[in-house]
Length: 548
Image (cartoon, rainbow, N blue to C red; front, side, top):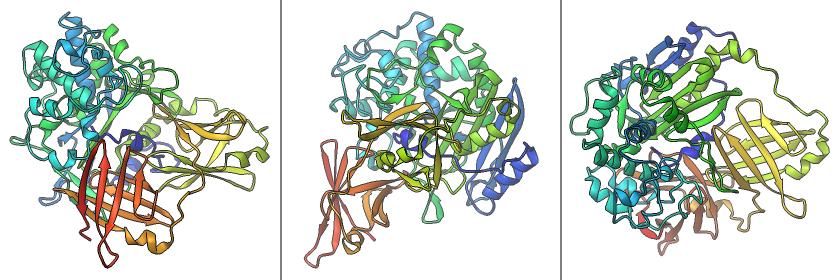
């Protein structure tokens, strides 16, 4: 559900388990270590050939009552919900009740530009409709219930990000609209359609659309980890999520879903092929290998299909390795998570552990040892990853890369300009301008490919006193606090429930994000002390007083 999917996808996976043969006992021991004491929890499941080979719960579903997480614990699953919404659209298409070429205007005649936007565009994040979760006021509104029509009215007049089909931007507005279209066409409310069409027939008795007023029994509580401690997370009213991310489930029910989906028992084999075929993006467009509610990528060079999910207090990962008939599910109840409890990290290490036999059969990654280390100097520099900065350095004829807030790892050459990480499934190609100078990198990981330009030397150099003057916390709205910190010369800002992102100075008091098109101006009082931040984003401006 979170709009920060790209930033999460870039996180390199640390060594969660030592490089030893797989052992259920060792997996259990390590996850118990990560969840010892009063901490949030994680439920995990891995299955092969239709049989569960490992499932367990660790940590606490509720810190106040000390309720432990079990495989039966229910979690909000965020954007993992999108594949259900997409499957519903495909099911209705099979029944000839709609077509993927239908324009949005057929269902919402008053939606601006709706005649040019098709259901295919909505399904693949290529509609250009601006995502309402990117609006700066979103977190200040999300705890109060909202009617679908009012939410639609809140975002439908936002300027589009691009013309339909001309770009790619992860878009919760699109999937909210798709959920409403399912309700229109089927004649049933979206939650009821999913229950009657998918959940009941598949025996998914612990899955449904989350209603804040009537939460189901056995739900975990959501938390956020910050400043070394867990606190109750900002509690979204899930009326804001709809088809974009409103579902809750368990690891067992999501296993049942995967078995049915990939066994062509949810939609036809032809529809499943369409759902798992990446959209063809316009030339030069950065994006993802996104089908209909699913991302196609590789894990250890094995084909992988899946989706993650995240909203304040909740993070999830569900994927399928089709050639191994393997499903992996990880559900957690904290975002930001405590150290080691990122579901994407856990799911991939579980897969590596239990698919050790398959991975060992793969040939070694091809590495070009003939590339001259003297050419590495041209690659050194800092690259703008929007949500972070990649620092590339040369040390003793070896090339290294370090993403903001993560360890430094060596890059191995595949060719003169192509390099890869051995610690994770990621590659970079160094791109050159017309003069032959390195100007950017093209990064590929987890089904995403994007270009990151090389940063020039900082135009504004600030001293420690200037940097320290803006540090602190700013009240961005009810339950939303922006925390500004620095590491050396790098200033970062973190909004409640989101990762920290680097900020870049334009002046001593004016900074810009590059993860989103936003800037913030810090204002001082008569004594020269910073008292507030003024945030600018998407044409909106608001003040946030300094509270600490």
